[in-house]
Image (cartoon, rainbow, N blue to C red; front, side):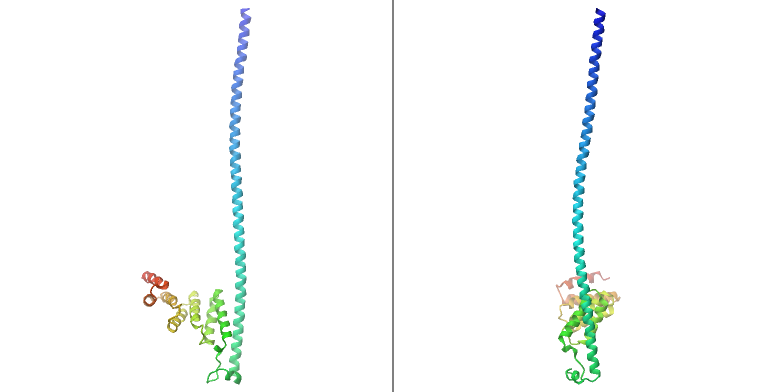
Length: 255
């Protein structure tokens, strides 16, 4: 009996130990499962954050594209308007040349109607008595300038001065023609235009700016002495102006 009791106790003890080992394994598996669930939750949270960021980035990009498209449409409209203005200017200039040529031919042919309306003793035609044509010619030349067609602008301004030597636009024509030559880097002709403006119209509001550009032309033509003189004259003649401040800085930079 003692033997069999001892056997039963051993068997019961082995079953209890097996149960304990089984519980430990189960806890380990549960812990591993919890860890995997935690990792999955973290990965899911990160994926959701990436998704939201992607959506925001996509929306931002879409808004930027819409803004770019809007700007392109505006630029396209401005370009069409500019082309239209340039075409109108070319047409007006062509009409002006045709009209001027017709009048000159009539004068050369001795047309009495033209000669009597000229107002000159020699019978020559004074086209400056046509203010409408004068304004159209100036507008056509200035349209070339705005379109950055500086060669055509300079030619049109030069022709304007020949056709309308006593024009009220003369000072402005000298200035814009000088700018056209300056932007083409034709510094000699630029100097002539600006110097004409300064000498004939010393009180014109563009004179200070013209003098500043005269100095730049002189520097480009390697005449530093003349440039210094022009800048000093500008500073003295227009104290406190923006052009004077620029002249001081430019003068200090000349070596």
